[in-house]
Every structure is written in structure tokens, then in C-alpha cells.
Image (cartoon, rainbow, N blue to C red; front, side, top):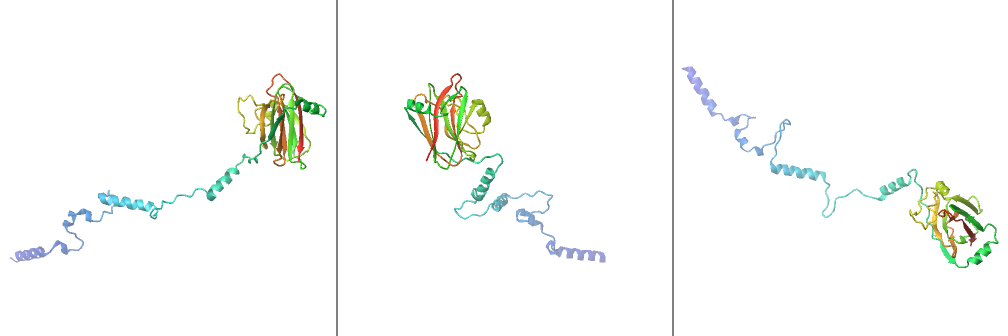
Length: 269
């Protein structure tokens, strides 16, 4: 009888207690709205975000990668030019194997004259003014600049046939004031100097030679065949600085004919 009364009293006490009376235990009705709960921090489980939360996260990540800009102002880009560009230019100019650009040369002044007989008669009386340029050869007259003058002048004519003629300037320091003449075959001339980037047109039969090549050589008048048998060919050029003029009389294109050349070179103040 006493056991029954004890059991009845214990049941009545338990029935009066609520589940929420114990701390640390949540009510089951919280699971009805799982989106209002904090996400699980268990990294072993895959977390599934709702659509609206995913969009918010994407936007926040994008904002974190971009720099804020004022209204109407484009995002800043890396600067191009300035000191960086100058440094690149300096690096390129200092690369080994590159050569510095030569100073520009002004064009030559040229003219023609019909006084063929007069010039030939006068030059026959002067020493070394009448020469034979043999077939396949190139005659180069080296004329150094001198302090007493300001320009170089030339005149020439031929008997019976034309001849190629061109003028170049060698910027190398002058070591002798003597005017010298150099005779070479066209093949020798090309083998000696094969570095000039002259305006050569392949297949141009009006040119007497392909190119004159030298790292210090500038072109004033390219080699072209001149009608020196019909009129006196003359010209002049102001000194661009210290150096040596190369006057080329080119007969390399001729396979059979030697050319008799009448010429003179002189200075003018």
C-alpha cells in the first residue's frame, strides 16, 4: 500500500515538470524553420546555402576584389610610359651588337652641262684626271674633309658610254689629308663591306652596284648609271662634319666595255 502511494506521488511530480525547464535542451519546434538557425560548423559536412544567401556572398566577394572608385571615375590601370618606358629604351640601346644611328646627311646638289669637249680638253692637260675604269671594276676616290673648306665638288664625263656614280660619307676620323684612289672588282667591294643597309633594289639594272657597305658609312647619292657620255655630270655637298667622302665610279655592270673617265674633284669655301 505504501509502495503504490510513493509511485503515484512520483508520477504527479514528473507530470508537473516542463521539458523547457532543463537548461541546454532546445524544444523540437525550432526545427520547423531551419533557415533561421546558424549553419553547422562541422567541416566534414557539406553546407547548402539558400539562393538569396549565395547571391549575397558572391556580391561581397566581388566587392572585396575591386577597389572602390568614385562616381564617373574609371578604375585605375597600371601606368604606361614615363620612367619605365625610358628605362626600357635605355636597355634596348645598350644591348650588345647594336650600333648607334648615324647623323642624317643632306642631299647632294647636282647639275649637268653640255660643255663636254671643253672639260675633256682641260682635263687631258692635268695629271691623273683621265683614267680607264675597266670592265667589272669600281674606282673609288677618297676625299677627306679639310678645315680650310666647307664643301666638296666634282665633275666628270666619259667617252662613248655611261658609267655608274654614287657618293658616300665615312664618319671615321680623318687620319690623312691626301686624296687617294682605290680600284676594286665588284665582288671584292661587296666582300669587304657587307654590313651597310643601303636602299638596294634587287634587279634594278639602272644601278651600277648593289651596295657600298660600312658600319660608319652614310649614303648621300646612291650609285646610278649616269649619261656622262652625253653631258658633264657635276655636283657638290657641304661637309656634315669630319670624315671622308667616297666618290664611286662603277663599271661593274659592264661585261665587255672599259670606260675612259675624265674627272676632277676639288674643295670650295
